[in-house]
Length: 258
Image (cartoon, rainbow, N blue to C red; front, side):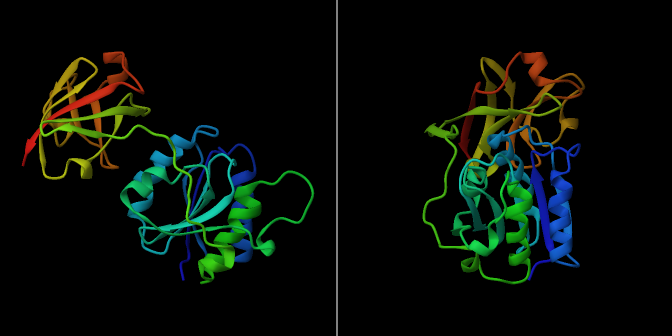
């Protein structure tokens, strides 16, 4: 039985949506520990939400329940993977997480007792996801939320490729608030390979660094970010501004066997 429930939403906090979801959790599950991961995913930006939870969820203890309310398109589901349970819309938000941790079990939320019975607009984070999180936190099995499903929606994101034995290619999929270019190439994808050089667009960044301190202030570098994805950055500056590059740019990595 888990007493930890995390919240990841696109609600922001100027409106009562996140607060009301917490109210449901505290009212129905006394003693629950609620952890706000973020409420600032850009509105209905599912890829951004997918990247965020892929970088955050793996670090929580097994059995943690994650309420992810980013866009409401898609049926409400619960997904079990990596020892975690994610309550979300079936809109692809678990795509990047599922690339690292295969889905163990998935259920559509169809139990009538868990669905709202009132007229008017439904706020899924408060009216559906929070009650489901309460049920799971009480120790109920996934079967109680609804029937099992075999198909979970996946985002059509670019995937890294091993073009040949000496070249790996990927793309920039996100620019963070520091202007760092985040790629879709996870460290695990390069397992067993030594990175010789990284090229973003036509700009050669050089080899792989371990920390920003490996290069002088104002110089570029490539390194693995905190979520394990390869990033192109500038020490003390914005890679986006300095290079004039952004989402969608091709990244090439020269590799050899480690």
